[in-house]
Image (tube, rainbow, N blue to C red; front, side):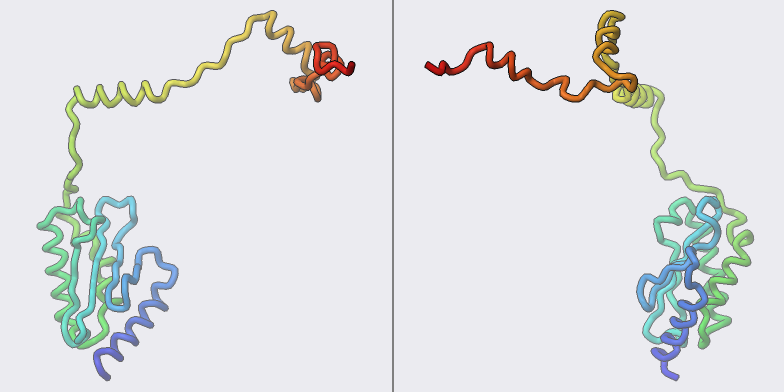
Length: 187
């Protein structure tokens, strides 16, 4: 079989195996991502593997450069890629994507044993935090409702029915009053 036929067969197999799996993502017919571990897991990582034209006779390109992996230190990334490349060498010439993904899942704890999360976020000083908190609290002030006096409340309840709704036509203009206020003379 040619390399393209092998790739097509492996692609079909991957699609059927990982159909409905949230961890697997096909970026293109020759590029795939697979998340090892749960999203909430601090030791989870995202494998990014792409095939060259001559795959499976040549090794696929393995990368951990996805944004998801920013919290993993470079030494651990290098270790993971090195160990995966050892697996690639052992499986060269055969369809190996499923084997690589499953091997990584089985050995996740061993691969991530020296992992210490890298914090790339900026830390705020206490003075800037207080300024941000003050701005945040002032923007969240609740709008005050209009306060009514007892007499205003009595008048309002006198105008409303038992459900608190104003009767139909309460704001209509009285036609008789309008005719008395003036208008065009009929003389």
